[in-house]
Image (cartoon, rainbow, N blue to C red; front, side, top):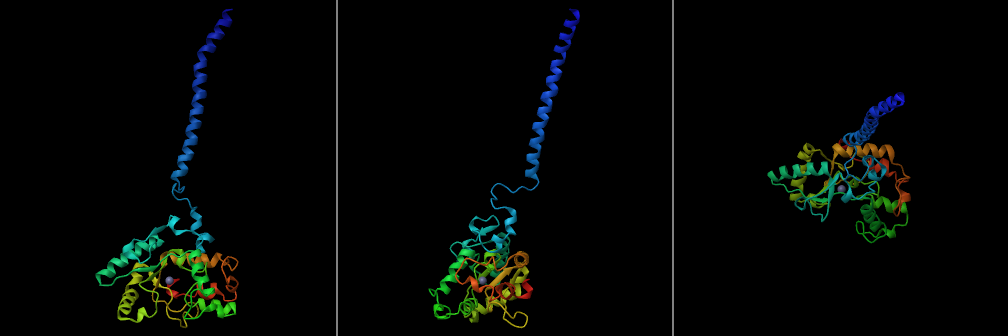
Length: 276
Ligand SMILES: [Zn+2]
């Protein structure tokens, strides 16, 4: 009997220790899982407001302009004092560089205004199809009178990109002050262009479409208004050339002409070599 009493006393004595050890282990397990969760957040998980996966910045949808810049975390709306566009967007890096350039140009008596910025796939499709279907004339011509689709596309390609091949949807490229070649023959246009030619490179901008010559034998006609923020666009061009094929350039009227016209080789790559 004394032996049984002794065993019971011993059991009662060790119960608190069993409870301490078990609960302690459970508590440690709870701490461990909390630790993993907070560790992941600290180790580079995107913040909650960044709803677009980080790899989409290098993905085909971004390279082809199939996104909405108003909802893209890397894009910023352009303040009205820098643009004539009602609601314009650029990638943050390009906009910051433009703001610096705008400020310094102002000191020299030059006013720079963005007249076109990010145009995504759908915006470019609207421009392209208006020309393709004749609702917007090109150099006074209704292009529905041009029967051969390759010839019709090549006329549009003098100044307008095929949807999915434009640099404007990258958010790195912008048109300054006018898109009319005649404007840049006026004394005001000449003065503004001279300032950009001498200074834009200091802010990371490069004139993408210089006059066509032996160094730039293919691509769009000369565009004194079009400037590209190369610290970002040169990387995007490399990614585009490495991953986009003619199977990706689809979804608009006349898309079958992209391959016969070699738009990737002759237009996407057909830029000022200094902008690569
Ligand atoms: Zn442009």
